[in-house]
Each structure stands twice: as C-alpha cells, then as structure tokens.
Amino acid sequence: MKRDKFKRVQDVLSGRNVNKCRPHRLSLLFPFRGLLTCSQCGCNLTAERHKGKYDYYRCSFSHGRHQAEWIKSEQLSAALSCVVDGIRIPEQVVRQIVESIRTDFSQIEAKRREQISRLNQRLSALRTRMSKSYDDKLEGKIDEQFWVVRHSEWMDEQHQLEAEMEKLQQPTAAADPALSAQKILELAQNAHSIYLAGNDTERAQLLRILILNCQTDGVTLTPTYRKPFDLICQRGKNEEWRRGRDSNPRYGFVALSLDLSVSCR
Image (cartoon, rainbow, N blue to C red; front, side, top):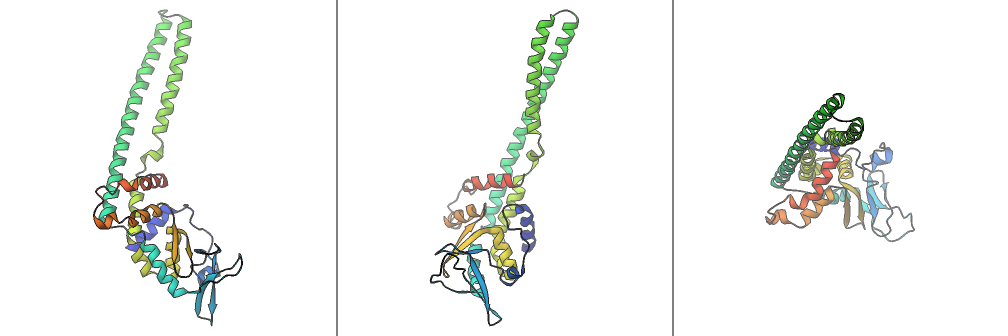
C-alpha cells in the first residue's frame, strides 16, 4: 500500500526537475551516485568496488585531492534513512492540512462561480441594451452618429466581459490542489518506512524524488530537499507537531499549499 502511494506521487511530481536520464551500468552498480557531493570541495562523490564485492563512496577529487572519508555502501544506505525521516509528518496533521486546503479551494470555486454568474448577467443586459438600441436606430428614435459611438463603446465592454469570462472558465480552474497535496503529504508521512522496506536501487529512486542533492564529509549528511519537501522538513524541525503547540497546522503551509496548487494545474 505504501509503495502504491510512492508510485502515485511519482506521477504527481513528474517533470519537477527529477533526473530522467536512462539508468546506465554505474547507476545500477552504485545507485547513490549523483546524489552526493563533498562538503569540503563541492565535488560529486564517486563509487568503487573493492575485492569484487565491497562498495565504497568517496569524493571524486575533481578540484584536487584532500583528506576525505571513504563510506561503505551499507553504512551510507543506512545513514540516508535519516534524510528521509527528516520529512516525516504525523497522520493527523496530513488530514488537517488536506482538509484545510480543500476548504480553501471550495471557497475559491464558489467565488469563481459567483463571478461567472455576475458576468453572464452583465453580458445578457448589455446585449439586450444593444439590441434595443439598434431597434431604436431603425425606427429613427436615435440618430446614426449616436448609434455608432454607443455601439463602439458597448462592443469594447462586451469584449472585456468575454475575456474575463474566458479566463475564469479555463480548465485549470477546476483542478483540486488538495488531491495532489494529499498524495505528496502521504508520501512524506510514509517515506521512511518505504525507504526501509526497499533495496538500494529503490531507496535511491525515492531519494531522487525527495532531494536535489546531499552534502557529506563522510560522517555528516546535509540534504537539500526539493520543493515542497524542504518546507515540510523545516516545519518538522520546529517540532510544533510533536509538542502539540500547532493550533493551526495549515498556517505554516501557506507556501506549500500555493506550490501544490501550481503543481497540479
């Protein structure tokens, strides 16, 4: 079930700067290649296999050699679980945030429908006025010059109203950001257990969805999360969720909500 959520969120995040290159032999042998950089010099970490079975990751020394730690593949894989755990979010908070986003969206939709209704009324009244004025012109109740001036003004107003209507009726206006928000937040909630259940290839695949890269000195890991997981991580560091002090969990996710709204359109 958790893996299904992982696959669903991959569809949501497709196209969001995730590496789409075909996997090659080195990526299959060393799945964490390309995810890590050296915190001392900024170079990418490379990987080597020793004695035909022991895999190690180390700085590529592209900017010159320096003292650096070699990291066993097994140790790195285990350590990276903390990176995934950094975006864990309580189930109750997921429900509250999604419900709040859905409520906001419902209010926006109601306002949009109200605006469309008002525009339709204005267009209908304008067209009635134009039709009556034309009849008055034919009957000689108004002169030609007055009709030409007024008709030009009415046509400009009609084009403006129709442009506003078209903008409000764009298909993107019907997208529900809460649906994408729920998938992404559920992934954040379950990512750690998904990571622990997978092999290294699957773990690296998950990490590529969650982070842009991760700096390391061989001991400490400093990840740079993708949006919106960077906001989730920052919120979790404040520990409002754990301490029960967050009376309005949606408040800290204003930027997250906006980002998710854009991503699903």
